Length: 104
Image 1 (tube, rainbow, N blue to C red):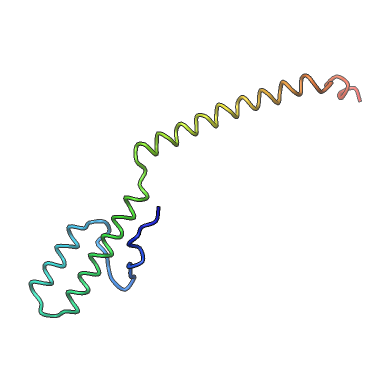
Image 2 (cartoon, rainbow, N blue to C red):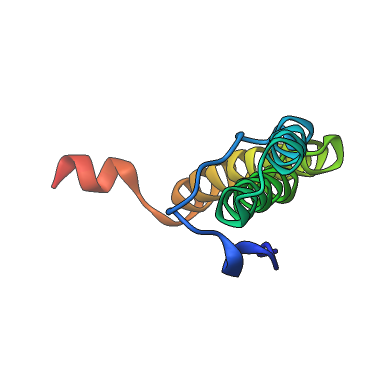
């Protein structure tokens, strides 16, 4: 799943990683201490970038459910591959005359 906010991310502005509370505090500090609209807009963009980063982390995180599914899939692949090895071995034993191959 892609982050629907990703379109508004801008490298022109900073970020607080995934710490939305810190970014919101930054907006509050600049808004209360400044009459400079550009500074407040910049802080708001930092907040937006931070929220986007937090949503990205949520969307790409491995939940316990995802981890359990991955483990189950790995187990089934492992089980089926060992069965395939045995099937190939059985077929070779039934269909290939090894003594004839060795003597030739």
